[in-house]
Image (cartoon, rainbow, N blue to C red):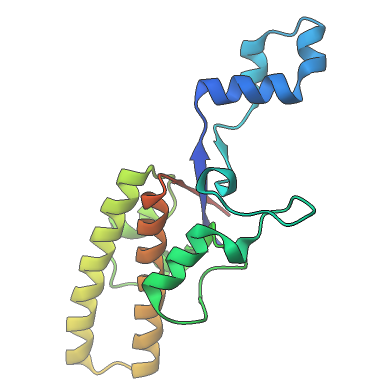
Length: 175
């Protein structure tokens, strides 16, 4: 089972009320209380609308034209992402728990939801631990290909967290 982080927008109470009015008019009409319908809604929604992702003629969002995607690519300077599926609002984060050199708090942190400020703190800690790893690995002479992949994976995670936080998105962990 793979662990993912998913970037989401946290909905305000006002936004939830608007969603209930839009999608549950029939239930409101028969007297179901607004408060009960709000409780049914998730607190999060996909970030596409908030960050201004363009849509195609069928109304689907174009992930390749998404501002989030463009920022992620700009910061990493390589063509292939290793840990991001087609939708860049998701990130395969389960590998973080498998690296023995990372602290337990960092490994365990991969499994929790994070608001933007915690995402930035987590990225800073990960970057520090990556630097310590690189210093230690040079002494151990680990396999250069493996070392390079680990570094790329962690740099992707750091970049993903920071760019999503820049857009005020929350990271929601799920399997």
